[in-house]
Length: 549
Image (cartoon, rainbow, N blue to C red; front, side):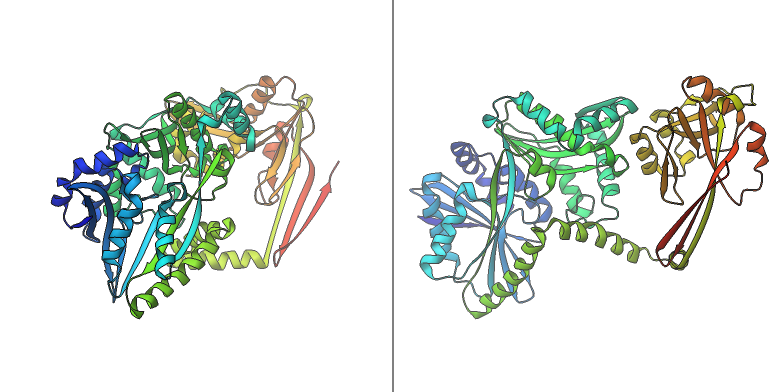
């Protein structure tokens, strides 16, 4: 066997036919080792990594490629797979019967490099490549380190009744109920993203990760350009799939993945946190699983990781190995030991979902606050400390019965839909997430719109009297409504609510105790029923309720 080193894009392009021939023989379904994916990656990252791909020949024919790169940091050189940090899975491109011999031949050539550490990620256990490496190291007495992470996937061939499978999975965590609630808000559609919607996709991802630790680089620098270019990739065996979930033509979730022969790999996903209660990501997962099944894909790869939604849907689990080993000499071994120590800590953290959540979300918020620290933040901190030491809220709960209604006229209020909410975003002072929470809880908002302007609006809750400042809710009696968050009070709106809801006998409102113009409510027929006082001292809360009737 002969080993030839490829160190340039030009030389690599010369071997394109050999590379594709081997993958075709193997019926490869790993998108990250397809020639076009590799070339895309090298095009954007070759300034950071030197190409060091090995071609193995036998009887004048190439039978394997070992796709390595070299990166120098301080006194060490690191040999890694092409696609490092971007490819979830990697492997040796080799005719299966020659794989082990090709790996051993290349290792015999490159293992004598001093101050060199090899870091090989993304080796699927089912492909047995990692076992070949481990067997070689064991025979040669070379120290090595391995770590694993799960790779859940769906094998459609193992599902007896697909419709039953989908129904069962959608019922978990109330997915079917949440889907119905979202569809009551507006027109919900799922379709492939167009080229002119790419920036909308990137902006959604940026919004989602604004206060989190994002390590993907999906929206930053040349990594962003790489993903943008890769989104257009399509050939006979590999296609990038971009799919979005829309409500009223607004993107609220997307999937970025690849179809490679009989396998789909879900790669990057994101959703709008404003709609988080509706679980739009799970909804889109449901739709794409159906689509892949109908389009004869055999495997739906949920990609690496322990995220709960992956383990909710998978039928099978593979494992992904990372193999680390040193080159020649004590210098290489010291570098190897330092890296493996760090890897052990990372693996411990990854297996604890709470730690992952803390690092990604809580540490992300702290980092964002530090980066954007301004003097107004000091005022907020001082205010928060003051509120922790002492707070006092007093609210009066007022009731009007249908028989006590004084207003005779009605106002032409209309039920506010999601279209109007999108149309008048300043109306809700940017608190879109809270609005979606209310809609999820089946609360309703009414408004008066004249000449394309909103003149008044208010919210209606049919189940509870909720006072956000107090952080408490009082259950409503039967046949009652709670009206709150007025732009300004309008007694005629109360008359209209009684008219629209024939079964309603009582309407409640809450008024801060310090509000001066309470007579406005009394004149309309409201009476004070009870008062709630909440005092908070050093984080401890005391609540007192006083009735007046």
